[in-house]
Amino acid sequence: MAQLYFYYSAMNAGKSTSLLQSSYNYNERGMRTVIFTAEIDNRFEQGKVSSRIGLSAEALLYSTTTNMAELIKKKIVNKKSIVFLLMNANS
Image: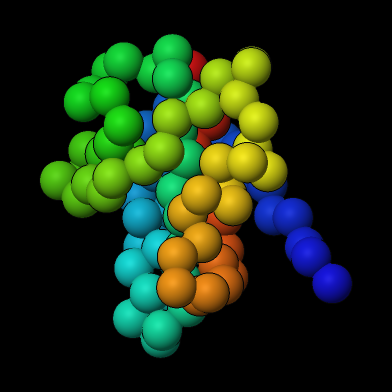
């Protein structure tokens, strides 16, 4: 069964850092992750999630018109399953 975890807190509390650490840890154990970030978030390089401590990772862009199911289907390559979807919703 799928689970949803929602983290929220004030700016500069480490949400992006936590997301990047989670992705790294899951990938290190062989669990495939996909990171999404909002198309309107232009604080850093577009298509990237970055933290203040220098960590960063490539991310897929989404907007209000994005068909998430189709986007996820395109990311499944060689019949590998995606174990975790991580979404950075800062805007």
